[in-house]
Amino acid sequence: MKKGFIAAVAAALISATSFAQTVVPLLDKACDSRTSFTYKYESAKPGESTFNLLTNGSATLEGRGYAVIATEMKMELRSDGSSVWTIDTAAKEAIIEPASDAVPSDIFSNPVVLVRSYKEFFTVSGTGARYTLTPKDSSLNVKSAVLSTVGDNADIVLNMKDGSVYRLTLSGITFSNPTAASFAPAAFTRDWIVTDLR
Image (cartoon, rainbow, N blue to C red; front, side, top):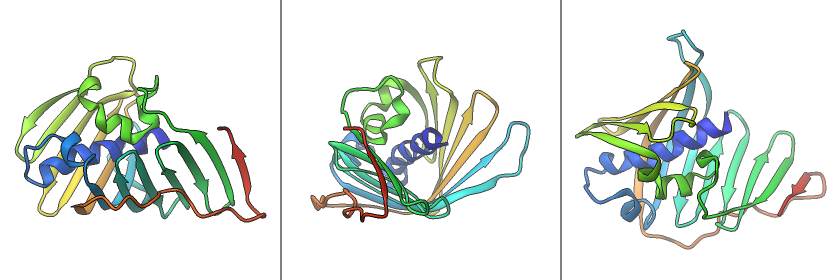
């Protein structure tokens, strides 16, 4: 589920370009700005049309860093560009891994790399308020992603090869000047279980 969520966040940033009604490439817009939004993340099992809420929350990306706060799941995914923290706030557990700008074998493991390199991995078609991203590599688990904007909201629907569907609805998309603020979490107290794999 984490990989599907990261893919949806990256698709959201790609969609945010059309939401902002600009032809500036995403790399120039999202990666050179501080991009923020709130979201609702839902899924449907293969063959079902009813979506179930997985989580909602907020996301902010800037440069090589990001913070994705999943309120319902009580999870946070944070990176300062050199480390990635996967944080389970309910269980008081965190895993710290090295971040990499290299294109990973699993492109969904880092939303910043995916956003910066999306044209390497997807064929983009569409205009106006609706775009379709089709993977160039048949080994990816995503069959297609459909990005659309309606009013002040953006919807991203990921159609997975196993028939499951993930939907991310965004609102409050903003682009602002970079602040150089760190996305690293506050220090963990002694009652946390922290696994540092750096």
